[in-house]
Image (cartoon, rainbow, N blue to C red; front, side, top):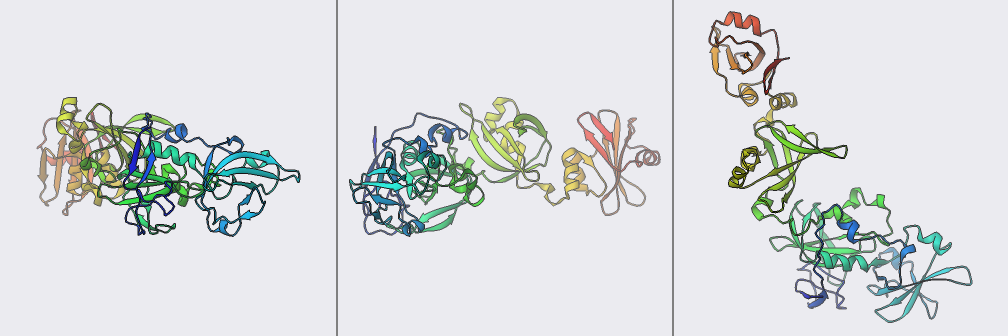
Length: 464
């Protein structure tokens, strides 16, 4: 097992390697702490990282030797948790703060009470926690556990797997330490989907026992205390939602292994708004299944994730559609030469996507939908018509200065778009194209103005 000096880790005055602080916190002295690290051989995706590495242990499954740390909260300072095994007297939780307790099983007492026993590594004394009521079997099936105790098995495993690894931030709310020998902190805001490096792992709280300190590319450190296995957390699963969602590991961080890291310039696209400049195929998940779908032009997305595709120059974008919030996936190359070698220009980010909401951002939802679907509807401006169907083959003014735009279609249909004097579409319709694009307008008007909108498809024009 390799030894690694935590150059960036600060500890409390007790030189306890489980107490870690973000850099910059005021302290009377700084100590170098040596802790062990084993390089993980695992390269699991985020979907099974916790399940594979952080098993939940109910009290029924606790084994002799499991290690915990006493991390009292305010309530615990009023109600003592432990008794001295030799004297039977209660011991202040404050006096046991940061002591390491080793589980030694439970014992049924003659008076009908149950003692959960521990040996303290810190002071070499024995202690017990007396169950408030019932048998051990009755008590252990709940998630109450033993108050004040943070499970060190999760801390040790997280240190082994995550130290010096890169994560993605999954919330915007994190913390910085403000006290060296206390638990004071200040709230900080961090961009979501930011690549950060784990520089220290220690103990947080009983409910959120793993304190993960990360550092961004600018050297700024911040942390989150999170639950991993939820062993002895004292919280139900449904309590890790809404405000507490960030205190469950997936709510604050994503770990995807060594292939996750993207270069700085590419990671700058994370959380950005983009729009499709052309129709394209994407994958989308619905009803638990992934299927290919056709996405129209000028569809707005927010880039939620960028993940390299192994052994290629491509990246899988996770895209959240702005209006429907539906999730899409698209493999893309940020290097045009790589896209050209693949033979599909749609695969080049710069060709397919435009930054921001696009030229259609000022349109109404109805007009934006028509533009995406290649339809012309009354009320469109000339610019919006061009966005929907492109440049006309001919623009013909009548004697009153009203314009008509003509579009030839491969299926023998002529699209006629009529504007008012202000350049707003009044009517759009189709007629059979007999090759006389610039012919008399009277017949054309009679044939084409019966319809108020027209739909362009890949094969031509269908009148609505």
